[in-house]
Length: 434
Image (cartoon, rainbow, N blue to C red):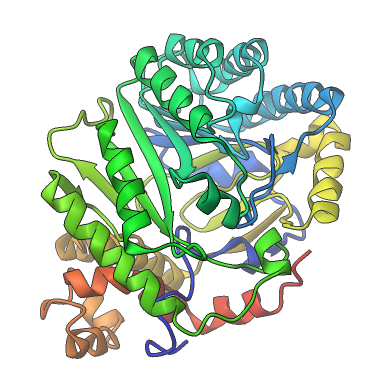
């Protein structure tokens, strides 16, 4: 990867990416995988692979408008998986963060959401911990939101993308502004403490004026958080099948991003990463501390990842409709005993563990806690990763090599891929997308 190629090379939200995972042979028992792990501050993630539509930019593992009987079968299988996973953990395992994503979790009806929470209570317990749930304009209805609020949801994230219908359609997301406004109003009326609004920049035909309109409309709702995503055209997605070359696209996206940084900063928002902006003084998660580098993650559902110190694992991964349906059918057909094992994953050696720590810290605005790194690994991150000096030379990293500069944050989607190891990159290249 070259830092000069493009500022938009890839969103490194997890390391390593699922395309680096391979089948584990033999399959390890989850009870063995978790036996030596700290379990006093875990993250629980639940994956619902259903949506009311497949957006043109989306490369997530999801199926649009599944038959009702498949949703029923998925919840039944999720209950079996949850039971087996709970039995694989320590009896004293404690969860400090929970998230339900997808797909669109609120594709489920209100009664189905109630059933989901009944399933999750047996795994994650009933103690009040911060709970984040993803939703969409079409499914953020008062009855569904009442279920979420009643089960302690503290954050809800809604993918608006644009407050202009024509732009939303250009991004492959047909929606009506009235539906968006009704959903936002319902979320506020549900009194869930934190509202996050997702917006996309770099849409075909988007201008500084139309981008300003979406920013202004989002700010009218005083969201506690805003996530700004550069548009990517990825293989096997709707936009990917009809993509055309745009010579000035990088410049357009960077200009719109810098515009947004100025607008949100003036409005009292603090940038926590390239994508995340949080309103100063907004409610903070009230629960046990969780550190994504130190603490594990337990995933439920056919598209969920799980993380331990040395093993990241999941089920198979697909993007195109036939591949997604095949993986989903496979998940639904499995005997209960299959959920006692890790199926597909990646073993992180000592250097990959260091690299993951570095990446998860460096791409955040607060940057690297160098003392914590030394405590964890016994070496300095500057010694383990001398190539960071190149980022300092470019003005993207401060001289202590602990924190990205403002310009460095804007280039996060180049820096992340640039720091991926050669072994992980080779595994990703060898993966056949389906």
